[in-house]
Length: 160
Image (tube, rainbow, N blue to C red; front, side):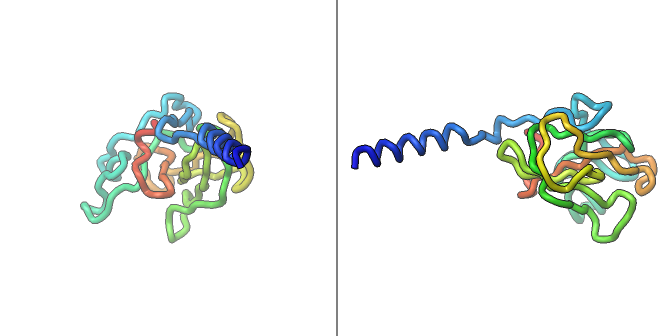
């Protein structure tokens, strides 16, 4: 009985020590040409890229964080990730209606406006996820960007 209790206690300790504290996670560079993950500011016509920014005259809020990225730029894995299928930002199809669901470092998140190399598998930090789609064809004059959205719709800003 003592051996069972000791074994259970050791197993619990190992499980707890392996668990990642997501509050300490920081995204590595997401986009070629933006190694500091500079956030999109405000565009006169299209609003701001911060989480919770007003949309449609205050009718809704921006559900993610926009990280500056040029059209056609390479999008990288910010840390070791598992690719978990397509994530389309729009109901109606357009030139930028693509993205991917990802998991890694205890986080579940989506990247929008990205054409991934694959929708499944695993990648190591810094490996190519895909290419930023042509935002300028849909939103002329916007600061092109990757949209980062947490699966639970919480604010991703603290990870940058």
